[in-house]
Image (cartoon, rainbow, N blue to C red; front, side, top):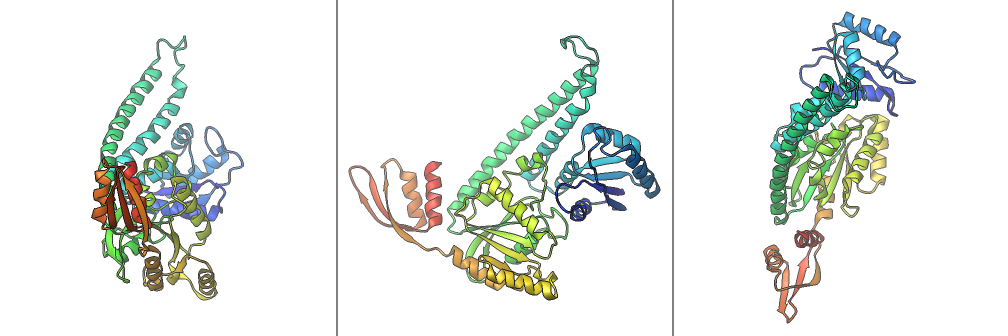
Length: 414
């Protein structure tokens, strides 16, 4: 299958947007990119997206290259898609459709598969309704007796809605299981470190170096889709749980943002967030800003420590390498390293060990006699220093970390 990519400028430099679009195409197995081009659109044509002259010009080139799949890096309406497919005699995918295909190919866990199916149905339902709009008034009248087009719309819409209800029901069961696992992890006296970053920043390579796990780590977008967690002992001796998450990307389709919010919930539970950046990438700053925006949208607590690992330092050369090194040295909570060569990781491990070191402080708690579960949890954690029963309840003196205090607060809420 031979795709031909067309990109629509969305505020980024067109050349970089085109490069990312090509990377998305390569992330889907079996595609051979035979051509790509930036097409500047002062105004999108409602029926064809492009002007008729450009449509004819592109159609001729596609015929010469024997293209049978066109990828447009941007939104394409159902009407535009149908008209362009007819004009070019090809299959066409917009950005949302392509990313859905990639996610469907990558999902491995039960939750990941269900999330992709739900997102795909949401996307399909929207396009189905819009695509059939021209038939809805086919028979006129007051609408009490629907025409054949309207009847087909309702039947298809109902089938999709029923399937989406089934998927949401299955996802709620998976979510309950995940909550049980999360509750079990709270009892483990290890802090959680979440790796986040723009897709292809090198998170999975770092995760593999830390854990010895065989996580898919390739030079392609969305190499990791489902979150992966492992208990790890850092070279410093510090024991932590490391979570590798799906890579972020600019202009992530709305359906996928909603569908994968639960997948990214692991970040909200983290004691430390490590923002892994591809510091050698020409758009590293805009990628970093995109990651920060998504973290803010997720509702990550401001008090959660965050450090940046400027990864892929081995790809920097000469003056660029020296300039980046100087910037990293001058910037707090930033570490320059390479997950491939291991250079700079020792200083990184030392720093996060200091951040996660369990600094304990003494506090006094008062529990009611009915709060036996909370009392048992405190003793299980080994934080109780002294206990006295009074007429009102139980006074406990606890020596604990901020993380244990936060987990205890969550336990009381639950």
